[in-house]
Figure (cartoon, rainbow, N blue to C red):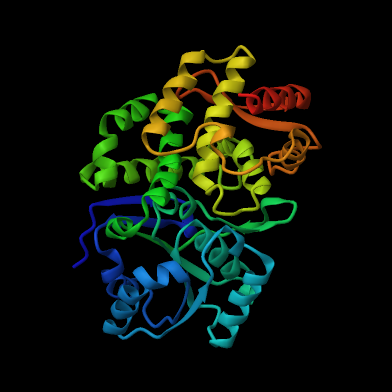
Length: 371
């Protein structure tokens, strides 16, 4: 019997689903999937790194439960979220003769979850899929809420669809194999939830930081609290026409930095978000909206977690301010050419600000580049 320590329900009517959180859920996946989706076949999408650490566990579980499946393995890394690899997945699902009522399994981090979910949304005009997130970032953020997609040369996540999973299995034991840098990158998304509208959670993270990184009970609780937070937002604003945009705190700056570094290992997504959140709070301070000490407090906590917090922390030569501004202008929150940022009045007081003056953003980036 599966050891489920937390269950978060995403109440979206006929498309509702559960997020199951607990240890060793990959080992229990076969039994869970056989019960929830009897008679279905499965197409597993994963990457080379996850294939070494987690795929054998999933394969053994599916085989033990007598389930039929095929596997598609892609290269690891953000650059995999591309047209080329999307085609590989779609053609692989078709070649496996999976039918519309079969399911895609996304086994991996945010890249695989986004890509496999998007492939499921367009293959045979829409297949169901299951998220089995193996990174902290994916467990607390990208596996929940139905955002799927790939990157474009014009920017990050500009091609995609809203396509909700049928089930999310967040295996806490999978996080034990993550490299420290990957775990820290995911932790930036955990911190984000406190900074948006839950200052008590941010304070709790400051107090329980060590236990979360060590793998104690606080880790499962932190993931459950993040998933519950995101579920509430998704239920209220599934297609991101309102409050869901708050979940992009730090992402406008972060995505521009990711694009500038070529979606490479120079800057992981969570590292870009970490720098972006500090920049968002500092920019808010420069606009007279937020107290300056909050930026310092946030940066100190992120640095303690092994995360970069300044532009100078990015290895290599950063592109020009004009290049970064061009990337920001392609952000998904741009409306009729006007810049939209998630700004803040302090920790736990984020808000959506439309029509932000590009000249002020450019001047701010110039200031940050000189530090």
